[in-house]
Length: 265
Image (cartoon, rainbow, N blue to C red):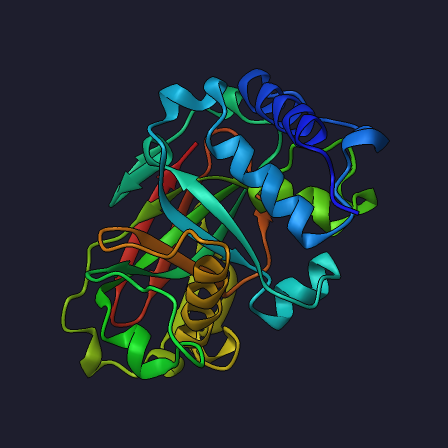
């Protein structure tokens, strides 16, 4: 049985308030706690349209979490999870974020794509060829995450999903338009914190190939009646385990063939 509309709205109210106040939640109350993926995504959609988020510029991009073994093992979740990214939390090239606006910030090293065409529902689902035709550019990126829970390890995956699966923003590196000359699965990437390597991986760690993650999201979004649109971007999953960071840290995501994205707290 799905949550009622009132319960969905209650959960969205609590999640938005926690973000606005940078205050960690213990848990969602039982009466509005999502128990299914459908409930979790319904709450997420309510967060995206909540009046409290009006100043955040709407959703201009998407994230996919748990697409690599390192992240699935870390979070003990064995399937991809999608979330939205608000426009005003998107930074280009080099970003700066006030540490005090976050509960417990973390960073992830990701490959991102920009869409140049819509990805509507497709009979039989999407595949590499259909999503590749829609990709106008590929870039290095940093996903900024925020642990907005007193103990996220005690939360059901559906509660994490309802809250955009930790997303707090991203930095997108310079777009690479001739990405078809690159072997995305073979690209190696690394995360540097204050000049020291904090993790590394390759594109093939993302569900076997980065475009597999985009195929998954394109089909999910179409099934939800909110297909991916031209102009939107998607971060495809972290090549490294989440690194929790402190005030003053400089973070660099460096991916061969795609360049860098930089973030300072």
